[in-house]
Image 1: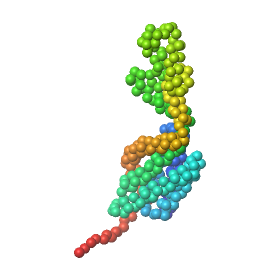
Image 2: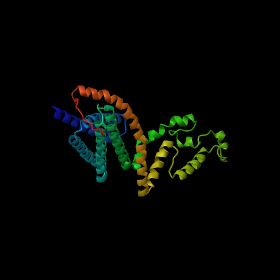
Image 3: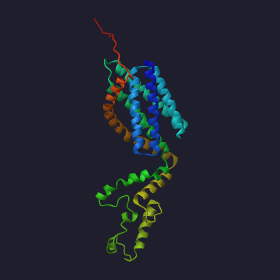
Length: 305
């Protein structure tokens, strides 16, 4: 029965691990709330069952479980479009982090008289979340190219700053470029616009002059109907295409570091919250006979003179 329980836990670890990274990849391809929630939920359950397995202190079963998981990760990310070396690195980083977590839990619990589920869960979560953040950063950096600026999510993110510009009484990113360049000022106020001495009835000439000026500065062919967010997206795309391969590599490294430093604190806070939720769930799993507790006597060395 004890062996059967262990293999159920192993099976659940693999299932929730696979589902978690499947939805991570789905989130990278199509960012939405559903994918994020499912991915984090599966990661949470993966960590819970991995915490139970790690506390058993069975090196062979733990090692085989995570080797199988590493093989899956290699095949999964290789088929996802990552090159062979990167897929191998991802798998090795997973094994190193899980080995680190196992050793920390093993030596941590070895010195305690009672099992500390909170400490075990936090250690397991820290290793799993670091790996997840690492994967997201690497995949995002590798997949990052000019086409990413065509994603509607980029334009939507820019336009979410609209309230800030509105409070400052400035044209927001959803405004047309003509609004931003003050080209729609009433004709009776045109004398005050950059001191232009032009025929007041010829608004089109003023539009052409300013649009041409902006077009030259941004190296973008403007027609006057574009929104500011449209122009930002096109400018970023052109800027990226203008970089050489070495600069793109440097930019991707910077992007990966930025993703890690941005997301990891979120996972740190999330770990604190989820650790509180995890304790009653682990207790319930004990009631359901997923694991059982035994007591044993221990001997301790001491120095006498």
